[in-house]
Length: 206
Ligand SMILES: C[S@@+](CC[C@H](N)C(=O)[O-])C[C@H]1O[C@@H](n2cnc3c(N)ncnc32)[C@H](O)[C@@H]1O
Image (cartoon, rainbow, N blue to C red; front, side, top):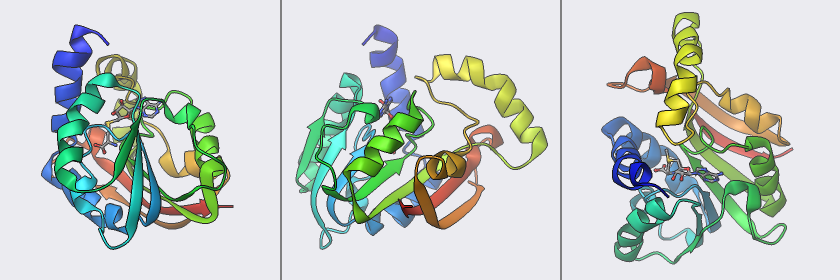
């Protein structure tokens, strides 16, 4: 945890994740979560206002960054939801097998270094009938945009806490033992195209 992370990166992530188009995406997917929920990479807990209080029993918020957990605490306190923060990465989920009804992934798969291990961990803890609910930015379908995503990615990744612009989100999910049962994608409005292509939907264990 350096000064850059504390005074620039954490406020930047909090701000970038709070834009109107991203909030619109959250409102589409977060209410799908039910029962015992695991959020992987909870960040500053910006999803909490959009949970359906009648469907959610409990939320584990996995977040490896101390700076982001600090930003999450006030949002958790005012949410009225039962949230337990866990200071570990997605590659090390400390929950029992088949213990989670819904996993929520919002703008996190771009950043997890070993995405395959993390998704395998998610598959392990998810109940057989459970759902992985996601909205993520990733590689764009247009060659001209994708070319620039590839070019800029090495520098962007260093500046943005490990965030990758060019991950093929649906492929990562299906390569890790999930079937995607619902998938939509588009460029978010009012967002630079390099960061704008979003994939959202629901996956289940294959
Ligand atoms: C762009 S932020 C998104 C935060 C939140 N999900 C949201 O929608 O606002 C990405 C988050 O992933 C977290 N992260 C980084 N490495 C991770 C890992 N290995 N496992 C889980 N989360 C990780 C970061 O600390 C950061 O909070």
